[in-house]
Length: 186
Image 1: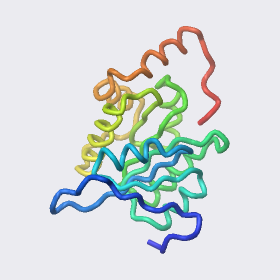
Image 2: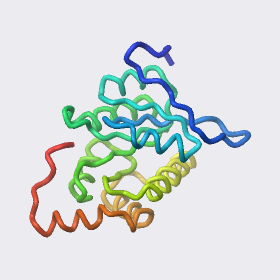
Image 3: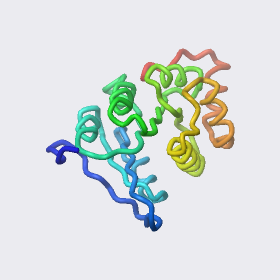
Image 4: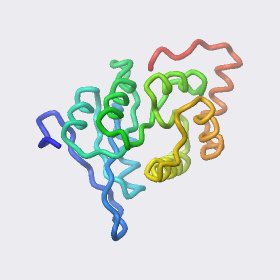
């Protein structure tokens, strides 16, 4: 890895200790606000790198040894999440990729997650405990080689199993019922 350059976000160390014999793992979070990055370093043993835009995320890929990526396109950079996920997969093929959809409907966000080959799909309106369970479970599965290949069925099964109490299910149903068009962000 190259030395971090100007414009490259730093690593934020986890507030939790890493178990003896385990190595530190770093999650790159691409999204405008640092909410998920703060959640990860305060509630998991993973370090985090928070990138606010595509430029910072790509700089982080060059500078840091990364193990996972959570990507949500900033409002003013549609398509950034997919582009960064594809680049991450090329550079860190053993790393976990999580696409954060802008639309609560899994059929809409799932299609976009599949376009970039994301391992996992998440949506807004998830309970913190559900998101953390999903992150930890899928990180272990990816490390063990037991994560299924990306598919709409996999995304749906994973979210129904680990996030059944999250609010996005109701929001998605309301959007379907009123016939709302797919979200413009991706």
